[in-house]
Every structure is written in C-alpha cells, then in structure tokens.
Image 1 (spheres, rainbow, N blue to C red):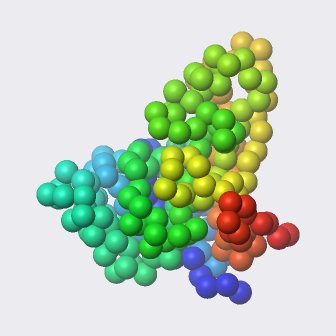
Image 2: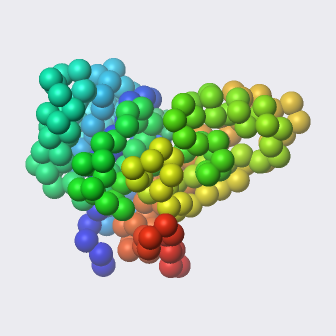
Length: 210
Ligand code: GRF
C-alpha cells in the first residue's frame, strides 16, 4: 500500500466537492486517505462548516491577514507541515497557489475544473463564466476535468475527465448543475486512484493503472 494520503482541502465556497470526497472516504470508496485539514481564505465558506461538523481541523488563512506574500505563503506552508499534509485538494479555491507551494508539493496538488480542459480554462475562466463560454461556442459537450496543479492556471497534466452532453435549450445554469453532479463522482474517483497508488505523474502525463 502506498503512503496514506493526508489531505488538506483548500476551499473558498460552499464545499459540495469537499462533501462528496468526505462521503467517499466514509463509505470506504476511498481507502488510505484522510482529510486532515480544511483551509479557506473565506471565513464564511460552507466548506468550513462541513469540516467543523465532521470534527476536521480548519484554518482561515487569507492574504489580507499578512503584510507580504512571503508571510502569507509561509503561514500556509507551516500549517500544512503541522498537520503532516502530503496531498492538497483544491475544491472551489478561488485564489492562486503560489509557485513556492507548488514546488513543495510538486505533483501532489489536484484541482477540478468544470469544463473539458484544455478548452475553457485559464485566468478568468471560473464559475458561470465557464458555462457561458461553452454555450456561446455552441459546443456539443462539456464536462469536468481533474488535473495536477502546476504554475499555470488550469494547465497541469490531466488525471481524469468526464463528458456531459449539452441538450437543446441548455442554459449556463442547467449545464452548471449537470457538470457539478459529475464532479461529485469524478473528484472522489481521482483521489481514490492517488490513494491506491494508481495515478502516477510522468512529465505532462498521468498514467492510470487499473
Ligand atoms: C466547482 O464547480 C469546481 O469545478 C470549481 O469550483 C466549484 C466548487 O464548488 N473549481 P463547491 O464549492 O465544491 O460546491
């Protein structure tokens, strides 16, 4: 068995992906992994409420609390060290991850994006903007992508993707709901692969073994 995943979830919003991951751990769909910490830049984040309800330690760490980027990043890194974190899951985290954190956790940070990367990604492509762009392009499919986080937005190696067909009369809101439902299956699945040592990053590719 590979080393247990001690996961820190970073979240800014309601935390439905975090909840799906937690459920998968509780149901033992994901074994060999624990969420040891939830970090948010937003003290009102629903994700923090979910963490407290489940007796998971939380940290509210925001850039505004610090005089410099360096102090902010040091606070993040030292908190991750205190909790012995070896894997980071971004679940609706709205802030950029500094390269110093990416270097410390190279190939150990994952994100979920509500479209089929490399299309419809990059700076400014978040939330409803993504689904609006997909509909405007008259695409036939959208979907969700789990990827490794590197120094560029929505750029790292892709771990898993799942397609969502676009129906006639689809709106950004209906598409967002469908994609989110898929995310709740796809993200736990991707984390299960890492926990079982079945997802291995090799340069720009992730190899999945069954
Ligand atoms: C999801 O749509 C995800 O793709 C994006 O942020 C949203 C987070 O939703 N990165 P939630 O907070 O997990 O409900």
